[in-house]
Length: 109
Image (cartoon, rainbow, N blue to C red; front, side, top):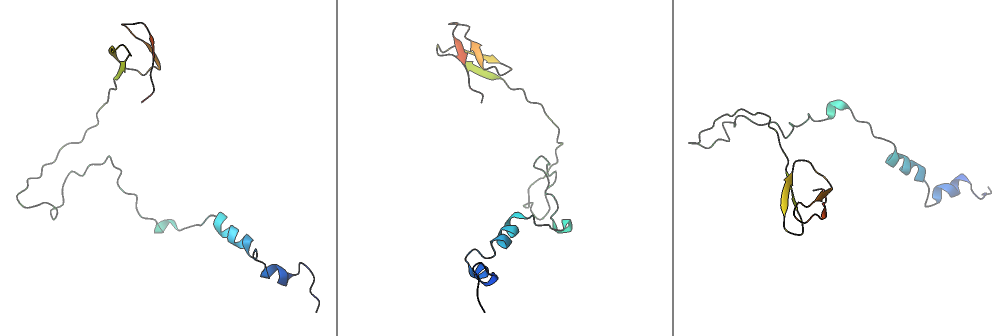
C-alpha cells in the first residue's frame, strides 16, 4: 500500500494534529444551567440592622438604627503659587488667582 504525501495518516501524526479541536474548545462559549448559579450576594449598601444572637457576646447591648440616604457636596480648594487659596463648588480646569492675576491650571482629582 503506497502512502501519498498529505495522506490522513501523515496528518494525524504531525504535531499540529487536532489544533482545530483544541482551538474550538477554547473559543466556543461554555453553556451552564442557570439553576446551578449561586444567589446574588447582598449589595454593599444594605445594612444589617440586627446581629445574630450567636455572634453577640454576653453583656453587649445591641440597638437598631434607621438607615437613610444623604447628600454630598464637593468643594474644591485651589492654591496658587503665590500661596493664595480659594474654594469653588464646581471643578474648572483653569482659574485666575485673585491675588496675583496669574492663570492657575489644575488637574482633575
